[in-house]
Amino acid sequence: MATYGVILLSGGLDSTTVAAYARARIEHLTAMTFYYGQSHGKEVECARKIAEVLAVSHQVVDVSFFGQVAWDSALTNPDLFPLPKDRSIAEMGSGIPVTYVPLRNTIFLTLAAALLESEMLNAIEGQGVAPKGMEASLFMAANAIDYSGYPDCRPEYFQRMAETLNYGSKLWTHYRVPIQVETPIIRLTKGDIVRMGMELRAPLEYTWSCYLGDPAPCGKCDSCILRAKGFREAGVPDPLLRRLGVR
Image (cartoon, rainbow, N blue to C red; front, side, top):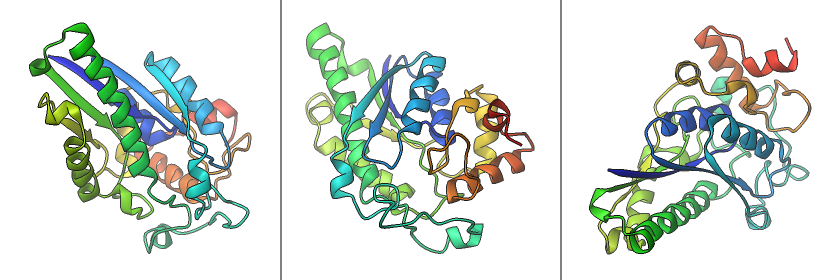
């Protein structure tokens, strides 16, 4: 069995945990990181370090034009849409926040699928690998439990995206190799994700979750609050703060 996969690696806690999970299961794994016009590039730098530590092939793709069309978000247009701060968990779950980037996961999954299909078609048509013994997986660190209610993080969304990607691909329509969209942490709490990352020995000390790109996490944005909640629930200190010397 020849296993191929692409993990969407943002440089955050969740995607790093999933990258460690995928690395243990996939023979030919590529980490893919996007620069999409977000307000800072620190997460991209972190993703590079994480891929290096995990010894995973890594591609950083510049899709900065996406920020021009998906401009209705605090992550791509912070001057127009201020980041929410100091919100309670209940407030985070009350609606779709301004940090939602229009159709971001749809674009990212499509691009990741194109990379995965290219690698697999090359293996089949250029290297003579038999399609019957191949598996294709896209890994995404979406979470529908301890998160901010994004519509493109729901299980039903990924089910439908997998169907769309397969119907639009040569890999499935011609060679009958289905593309699986795997979301291994979609039903886990942040505490569960932290415990999973620790068990997999993921390099959590290099992850970045904060919506800002300052030298240390702000501790006030939704992502920082959820991250702190996860480590608190897991009963372990945040290794990033320890590495930065932040209490």
